[in-house]
Length: 309
Ligand SMILES: Nc1nc2c(ncn2[C@@H]2O[C@H](COP(=O)(O)OP(=O)(O)OP(=O)(O)O)[C@@H](O)[C@H]2O)c(=O)[nH]1
Ligand SMILES: C[S@@+](CC[C@H](N)C(=O)[O-])C[C@H]1O[C@@H](n2cnc3c(N)ncnc32)[C@H](O)[C@@H]1O
Ligand code: SF4
Ligand code: SF4
Image (tube, rainbow, N blue to C red; front, side, top):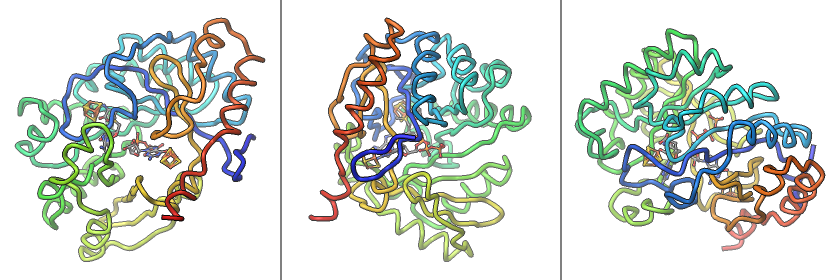
């Protein structure tokens, strides 16, 4: 296992596998990269990269985007990574129904589906899609449940959209009906999130208060990932994410990320530390290991910056 210079182990990778999306969420941070930056890595490339990362101690891979289910070879990517480690997908769910079966067969066992609200009208407003989209996502979720996938619903916290008792209660109810867990994500001032920050930002503490008021109880912290607080309410596990300006979160950061064109980022807010694409394309194990170790050594202790503010 590798660690950075402030002792954070490197255990997880986020792959941005697509630089396009079929939605236009009003807050999208696009995982800290550009739309149409290029999606240049094949399923075989991801298999090679994951093999090398897993030899370095990475045991968990997340596929994100853009919208990962827009990739026609997403099942091949899942299959390739599942050969070496655990893999999960974060998706808006619109194309889920048509993919569930193939993804399950490819080895997928866990998905995060971003839904934000249980109200179809609000949903349309937030994601910039027609109202039928909400129903389609629900169908995809139901299929996923029937297939036996572990589901986590993601809700970005948006003032006036999901920050009242009723909205939280409805999301918990929806999660319970799917045997899913639920996570609330504080809005990050990044990408479009920066533009709408003034209009929609609400601290995650508001959700913690609502959950507590509704009878929720703190469970524990996810020590292996950002020390995220977990609660239990109505049989549903609720995760609270405050992923900006939060020293506790960053001090538990065990993740690096690969852009859709193969550049390694040590932090969502950092510029790429190194371009891994040439090493990956040439199947150069030694070169890639050296490049990853060098990037890890340069990893900024961002939480120190926050802590010293
Ligand atoms: N700042 C920051 N945000 C992150 C990091 N990892 C995930 N996030 C954000 O957390 C939110 C939830 O991410 P997901 O893709 O659902 O995955 P996850 O909850 O991190 O991972 P799992 O627990 O494995 O499902 C998104 O807004 C991500 O961009 C990170 O290392 N730093
Ligand atoms: C960038 S999306 C990519 C995957 C997929 N398209 C989706 O929406 O689930 C990954 C996660 O980041 C969340 N997200 C996007 N912009 C955000 C922001 N400004 N602040 C916090 N979370 C954000 C999304 O809601 C989603 O849960
Ligand atoms: S949050 Fe996901 S679904 Fe929404 S625009 Fe961004 S990438 Fe697309
Ligand atoms: S250091 Fe902090 S902001 Fe950067 S990726 Fe890790 S948790 Fe996110």
